[in-house]
Length: 298
Image: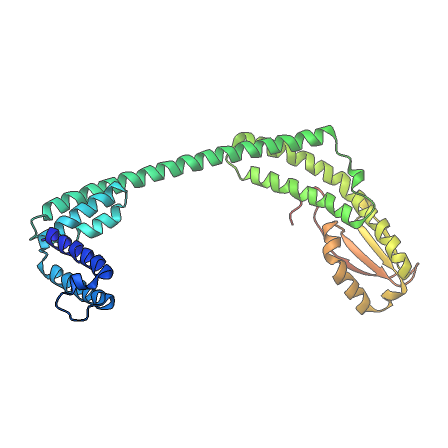
């Protein structure tokens, strides 16, 4: 029946082409044939043919067509679509058993495909992990080599931005160290321990210098506002601000609020405020109470 419907559909199409060229050949019964009438008759006939064809095509023919379409889907690895389509074939249909065999085949192929994708994904993850490990080890080795050769920290002087860049470098080292410490790789952990030891030694030596330089740089800027800035104590852990501005407690508080983040970054233990040189009493704020050797975490 499907073949007959296909033939009639083709015949209608040929009639449409002929009728559009010469309407009288197709509409011989019509006294005033026209291309528009040919087109309208073709639409009506096509609709009728579709309806009648749908009524006349048997379930077996539909199932047979479904089987062929499903095979094509399976060949193209569209297993889920094929399974859904084959599942529509009813048990009473003569193609039911073939459909069930195809469903089983599609399910097995889907499992194999899924396992293959999983294996490929696992292999890709393993390769990526190995590459990441190699890159981390190379980075640890580079940083250790750089430190062993000696780093000229004098380049990080002269202004606040340069001083902060040096502290950011400490933070970068801390990130490298932490990532390696969180790894299960023994070689990576060993290199991280070596780097951490050297970074701690550098920080112990550098933070006091950074604080002293900070006092000098800020002191030059504050001089224009009649504010004196000095650092003192072991490792220059205290920063002192002296000026008439600090006669008012509100000014001390506002000034501290603005500087707190930066002073914490430089690991000052206290900031102290007084309004004239030689004043015995001063207002102080506690800032950083840790050690300079602690790795930098932003």
